[in-house]
Length: 182
Image (cartoon, rainbow, N blue to C red; front, top):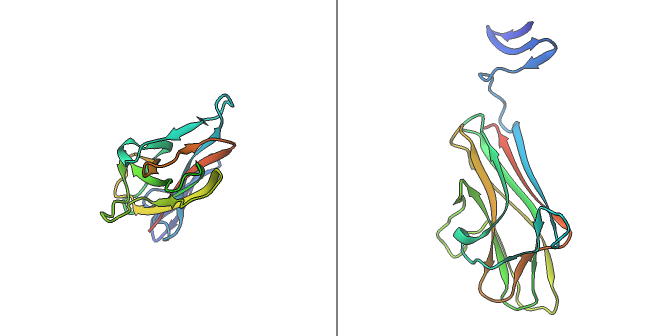
Protein backbone atom coordinates (compact mmCIF):
# COMPACT_ATOMS: atom_id res chain seq x y z
CA UNK A 1 0.00 0.00 0.00
CA UNK A 2 1.29 3.43 -0.94
CA UNK A 3 0.21 6.81 0.44
CA UNK A 4 0.85 10.30 -0.90
CA UNK A 5 0.76 13.07 1.71
CA UNK A 6 1.12 16.84 1.58
CA UNK A 7 1.92 18.53 4.90
CA UNK A 8 0.89 15.34 6.70
CA UNK A 9 -2.52 15.26 4.93
CA UNK A 10 -3.29 12.13 2.90
CA UNK A 11 -4.08 13.07 -0.71
CA UNK A 12 -3.99 9.62 -2.38
CA UNK A 13 -3.78 6.03 -1.24
CA UNK A 14 -3.12 2.91 -3.31
CA UNK A 15 -4.11 -0.63 -2.41
CA UNK A 16 -3.62 -3.60 -4.75
CA UNK A 17 -3.19 -1.28 -7.74
CA UNK A 18 -6.31 0.80 -7.03
CA UNK A 19 -5.78 4.50 -6.24
CA UNK A 20 -8.27 6.30 -4.00
CA UNK A 21 -8.85 9.90 -2.97
CA UNK A 22 -9.98 10.35 0.67
CA UNK A 23 -13.28 12.18 1.24
CA UNK A 24 -11.45 14.95 3.14
CA UNK A 25 -9.73 16.12 -0.08
CA UNK A 26 -11.33 19.32 -1.41
CA UNK A 27 -11.77 19.37 -5.17
CA UNK A 28 -11.20 22.63 -7.06
CA UNK A 29 -14.29 24.66 -7.97
CA UNK A 30 -15.78 23.52 -11.26
CA UNK A 31 -14.56 19.94 -10.90
CA UNK A 32 -17.22 17.40 -11.89
CA UNK A 33 -17.63 15.07 -8.94
CA UNK A 34 -20.20 12.69 -10.45
CA UNK A 35 -22.64 12.33 -13.33
CA UNK A 36 -25.92 10.37 -13.28
CA UNK A 37 -28.09 9.93 -16.40
CA UNK A 38 -31.49 8.61 -17.41
CA UNK A 39 -32.05 7.86 -21.11
CA UNK A 40 -35.48 6.86 -22.42
CA UNK A 41 -36.36 5.85 -25.96
CA UNK A 42 -39.56 7.28 -27.41
CA UNK A 43 -41.72 5.63 -30.06
CA UNK A 44 -45.19 4.72 -31.27
CA UNK A 45 -47.29 2.06 -29.53
CA UNK A 46 -45.90 -1.43 -30.05
CA UNK A 47 -42.33 -0.36 -30.82
CA UNK A 48 -40.98 -1.70 -27.53
CA UNK A 49 -39.66 1.69 -26.46
CA UNK A 50 -39.58 3.12 -22.91
CA UNK A 51 -42.20 5.79 -23.70
CA UNK A 52 -44.93 4.88 -26.20
CA UNK A 53 -47.51 7.29 -27.68
CA UNK A 54 -48.16 9.43 -24.61
CA UNK A 55 -50.74 12.20 -24.91
CA UNK A 56 -50.29 14.94 -22.31
CA UNK A 57 -53.52 16.55 -21.12
CA UNK A 58 -52.58 17.91 -17.68
CA UNK A 59 -52.09 21.67 -17.44
CA UNK A 60 -50.70 21.69 -13.87
CA UNK A 61 -47.33 20.58 -12.53
CA UNK A 62 -48.97 18.31 -9.94
CA UNK A 63 -50.70 16.27 -12.66
CA UNK A 64 -48.02 16.52 -15.36
CA UNK A 65 -46.35 13.59 -17.11
CA UNK A 66 -42.97 12.49 -15.71
CA UNK A 67 -40.79 11.46 -18.63
CA UNK A 68 -37.39 10.98 -16.93
CA UNK A 69 -36.29 10.38 -13.36
CA UNK A 70 -32.99 9.63 -11.65
CA UNK A 71 -31.53 9.51 -8.15
CA UNK A 72 -28.27 11.16 -7.16
CA UNK A 73 -26.60 11.24 -3.74
CA UNK A 74 -24.44 14.38 -3.53
CA UNK A 75 -21.01 13.87 -1.99
CA UNK A 76 -20.99 17.44 -0.58
CA UNK A 77 -23.86 19.65 0.60
CA UNK A 78 -22.33 22.77 -0.97
CA UNK A 79 -21.98 21.22 -4.45
CA UNK A 80 -23.89 22.63 -7.38
CA UNK A 81 -26.22 20.23 -9.20
CA UNK A 82 -26.49 20.96 -12.92
CA UNK A 83 -29.52 19.42 -14.65
CA UNK A 84 -29.74 19.13 -18.43
CA UNK A 85 -32.66 17.74 -20.44
CA UNK A 86 -32.82 16.96 -24.13
CA UNK A 87 -35.90 15.50 -25.79
CA UNK A 88 -38.69 15.97 -28.29
CA UNK A 89 -42.27 17.09 -27.72
CA UNK A 90 -44.94 17.16 -30.44
CA UNK A 91 -47.95 19.44 -30.83
CA UNK A 92 -50.94 19.49 -33.18
CA UNK A 93 -51.77 22.25 -35.62
CA UNK A 94 -54.15 24.19 -33.38
CA UNK A 95 -53.36 27.80 -32.57
CA UNK A 96 -52.83 28.25 -28.84
CA UNK A 97 -51.33 24.84 -28.09
CA UNK A 98 -48.11 24.76 -26.10
CA UNK A 99 -46.20 22.84 -23.46
CA UNK A 100 -44.11 23.47 -20.36
CA UNK A 101 -41.16 21.49 -19.03
CA UNK A 102 -40.40 21.50 -15.30
CA UNK A 103 -37.47 20.15 -13.30
CA UNK A 104 -38.55 18.50 -10.06
CA UNK A 105 -36.69 17.45 -6.92
CA UNK A 106 -38.33 14.77 -4.77
CA UNK A 107 -41.67 15.50 -6.47
CA UNK A 108 -41.53 19.27 -5.92
CA UNK A 109 -41.11 21.88 -8.62
CA UNK A 110 -37.58 23.33 -8.52
CA UNK A 111 -38.30 26.67 -10.18
CA UNK A 112 -41.27 28.50 -8.75
CA UNK A 113 -40.85 32.17 -9.49
CA UNK A 114 -44.39 33.17 -8.50
CA UNK A 115 -44.65 35.19 -11.70
CA UNK A 116 -46.57 34.51 -14.91
CA UNK A 117 -44.47 31.48 -15.91
CA UNK A 118 -42.56 29.18 -13.61
CA UNK A 119 -41.59 26.44 -16.09
CA UNK A 120 -37.95 25.77 -16.92
CA UNK A 121 -38.85 25.68 -20.61
CA UNK A 122 -41.96 26.96 -22.38
CA UNK A 123 -43.15 26.63 -25.98
CA UNK A 124 -46.31 28.14 -27.46
CA UNK A 125 -47.63 27.97 -31.00
CA UNK A 126 -49.65 30.71 -32.64
CA UNK A 127 -51.05 28.94 -35.67
CA UNK A 128 -49.74 26.56 -38.30
CA UNK A 129 -51.07 23.92 -40.64
CA UNK A 130 -49.00 20.91 -39.64
CA UNK A 131 -47.86 18.79 -36.74
CA UNK A 132 -44.76 20.21 -35.09
CA UNK A 133 -41.93 18.25 -33.49
CA UNK A 134 -40.02 20.45 -31.08
CA UNK A 135 -36.42 19.56 -30.25
CA UNK A 136 -36.45 20.53 -26.61
CA UNK A 137 -33.55 21.43 -24.33
CA UNK A 138 -33.65 22.84 -20.82
CA UNK A 139 -31.12 23.25 -18.03
CA UNK A 140 -31.18 24.34 -14.41
CA UNK A 141 -28.71 24.43 -11.50
CA UNK A 142 -29.02 24.64 -7.73
CA UNK A 143 -26.92 24.06 -4.59
CA UNK A 144 -27.52 20.49 -3.39
CA UNK A 145 -27.96 21.42 0.30
CA UNK A 146 -27.77 17.75 1.29
CA UNK A 147 -25.70 14.57 1.14
CA UNK A 148 -28.68 12.21 1.12
CA UNK A 149 -30.32 10.76 -2.02
CA UNK A 150 -32.54 13.06 -4.07
CA UNK A 151 -34.81 12.10 -6.95
CA UNK A 152 -34.69 14.51 -9.88
CA UNK A 153 -37.19 14.35 -12.71
CA UNK A 154 -38.68 16.03 -15.77
CA UNK A 155 -42.41 16.87 -15.75
CA UNK A 156 -44.15 17.95 -18.96
CA UNK A 157 -47.52 19.71 -19.01
CA UNK A 158 -49.81 21.10 -21.67
CA UNK A 159 -50.25 24.86 -21.81
CA UNK A 160 -53.87 26.04 -22.26
CA UNK A 161 -56.72 23.82 -23.41
CA UNK A 162 -56.27 24.00 -27.19
CA UNK A 163 -54.78 21.23 -29.34
CA UNK A 164 -52.76 18.21 -28.30
CA UNK A 165 -49.31 17.67 -26.81
CA UNK A 166 -47.77 14.25 -27.12
CA UNK A 167 -44.61 12.16 -27.02
CA UNK A 168 -44.24 9.75 -29.92
CA UNK A 169 -42.15 8.85 -32.96
CA UNK A 170 -38.52 7.88 -32.90
CA UNK A 171 -36.22 9.69 -30.52
CA UNK A 172 -34.88 9.88 -27.00
CA UNK A 173 -35.40 11.85 -23.81
CA UNK A 174 -32.21 12.30 -21.82
CA UNK A 175 -31.87 13.72 -18.29
CA UNK A 176 -28.37 14.36 -16.96
CA UNK A 177 -27.45 15.43 -13.41
CA UNK A 178 -23.90 16.58 -12.66
CA UNK A 179 -22.52 17.31 -9.21
CA UNK A 180 -19.98 20.13 -9.49
CA UNK A 181 -17.54 21.19 -6.76
CA UNK A 182 -17.88 24.78 -5.50
